[in-house]
Length: 198
Image (tube, rainbow, N blue to C red; front, side, top):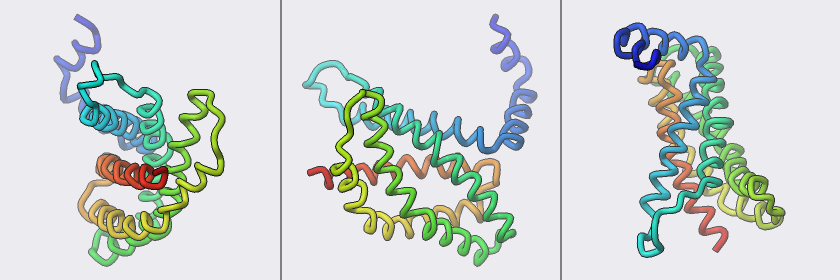
């Protein structure tokens, strides 16, 4: 029996305690792991659901998977984990108005730059991974064409999401809540990218 499986099988409570301890001591690192795993899994599911079986056996787009997991695990998840911690220090408490203030501030301040950066990242990184010269003009057009609309819609989505996160979700689990929400939001952004390209 493998030592890891032995440990998990015979000491599940200790394993859970150690995981919780790791989550509390390394919240940013934990958010990065979650971000990469959840977003990578979500993107795989999206690719599989959109695959036309008439084309033959399913072919996984690894470049797209790495790009999506890389953005969420390497940029979005750690950024918002640190943002939430600083917001709690600046405006402590879980009263409705306090959480609404923090939630609205999160959406208004971070929404536009994060959406624009996501759209640029998901176009530049595939070029880098495939050694393809990037079309800077096209990337800029796609990245900025719908940013104001995304920002307005994002204020409602992320303002509500962040308010709920601040009010009801324990700090140790906020990254999970945010990452799962990001999976839906990034899929939504992809629709605007496709529209801008066409």
